[in-house]
Length: 260
Image 1 (cartoon, rainbow, N blue to C red):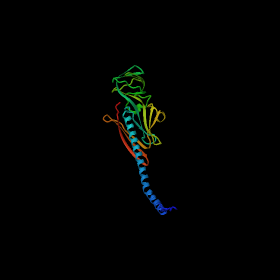
Image 2: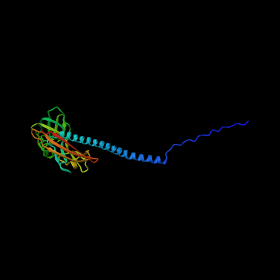
Image 3: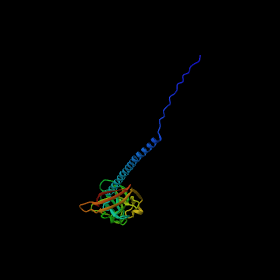
Image 4: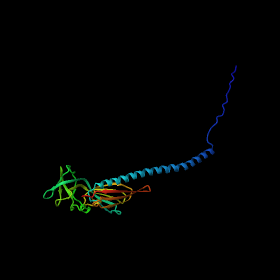
């Protein structure tokens, strides 16, 4: 007896996909969206980068101003002077003090003389001692200065001084000094701190240390007003920095002690 076979006919499956027209429309729509959204994302990212760079530059400028202000406040009295290097009044120089104190006597018949500190403190070992400096000219006349002398040694509360004659101060004040310091802008737009040189030397050729305080400086100007019996000396700093096509201006006033 033969078998009867039933064959089930499969239904044709439908295939999903893009037609050419749909593909063209999709490409056009993606292009439109990219053209609209792309610039928004690009300029937004660029603006964010500029904002970050601006904040960083502002922070560095404020830090540079604070660094200069702090050092100038601790300068040897009557040593601040403003000069011109590459632009008008773009350089300020001063004596770097590390210790302020009083003495009760200076003894000795010839050099080296001995200064006796009366505060109970031990003066630090530095290169120079300044006694009764009344003008920048006196300080920067070293080694012929009438107020700035070489330190021969420090032992306890006594300082040995190499001087052509016995120093004297009516106020019996003195300052220990490491040398001179200069802040000046170079032609590359960098504000440089020069240090490690004697008061009688030129900062540009004699400074041992030349450190960049901040770059992107388009201009800097110092204005110095000497002190009087009733007012301290005043140094005004005008700093201009420029980055990413944007210019920022800063202004700082520094009150400086002027009692020798």
